[in-house]
Image 1 (cartoon, rainbow over the protein chains, first blue to last red):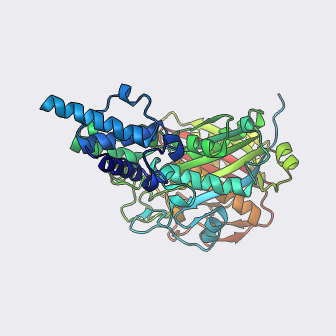
Image 2 (image 1 turned 90 degrees about the vertical axis):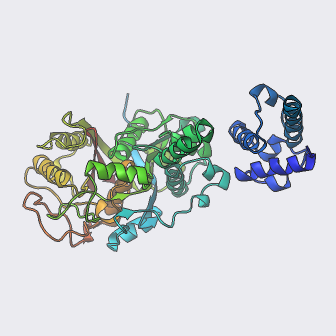
Image 3 (image 1 turned 30 degrees about the horizontal axis):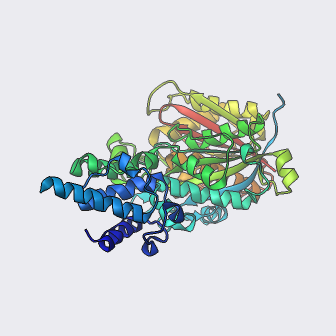
Length: 86
Length: 393
């Protein structure tokens, strides 16, 4: 999946929960930069799971500290799931 | 332990007739009504005046209203500068919490299953969310929780907070009540119970009264030890000089037929204030506009004042019943009556009821320049009663 397209989705998820600066977030932007806390993250994950039809287990979220980390995680999960279904 | 004197240094109110304590009082004295189509919504309230869009999205309307009232009160009191966070408490009650959120999430759950339930549901609905949010915003790290005693919540919160200050557990407490239940589910629930006015008119003590009108809003007071307020050099607006609580222990919705619980709450408040009935110049009644409450409250007032009751009026005539916020907003009204030397009216009162035979200030506002002590009554479903004795500065 295209990195830029996923980035747009992550930004959109952040905007949906009204995180200030969501629209300008880039791959290097961290949750700390955006003041995203654990409760925000639960919501963002929920929105992205629904959008991509994937499941992101909590263990996978360890070390996910930035927008770029989230984009790469979605890419890898989507690739795994495509592999399974193929 | 020496009890410390408890003074009031800040006020906040969000109501259907005005935001801010003074705007609310002005409207009350102008005899304005916030009731339209049988409800009293805070139609012009914008949560994002006090909160960021993200904060507002993460909390229920009852928290939005409480935060706005608390911010007004702390601003008036010149806080939070000059207070130790550990000595700063928050006691903000709600009768039922975020029922608007509950309704929305139930609907979403039934439509979409477990995935349809928001991760924010619990933290938005829980009745202590308002108290917790206020504490976070103000860095108030002293005692904090919410109380729930239905329609007596706001008064219990202020009374218990006053005790907290008097006992020395905190120097300053933000105390009050908040409620936002003008949603379909809750309106249907009170309608089903037969508690709401079919006419959609709040007319306490009037012979034609036929139930209460639901309103929404929040009220907050800054309660502070006198020495702390004096050390900060802030104006003292009034005092919580007494607080009385009681149980009817009779019925889950109906008041005790002889008003024994209501009487006990007032007697306890007067004893706590070391005052005599004759010292009281005004009573802000619970006055819901239900047939039972107003009759029984009148009986209780006769019992307490032994035929010599002072003027009594009901703020609910103007803004409806704010449930858990009622006692707090009405404490703001009682304090306003003392500060301005002016009794607020009971509006919509036209037809006297032989069973409600006191002076309800139907012609108000009325001058009361010598008013030094007022009572504010609140009686809740569950039979739980609270009475605040508010004194002049």
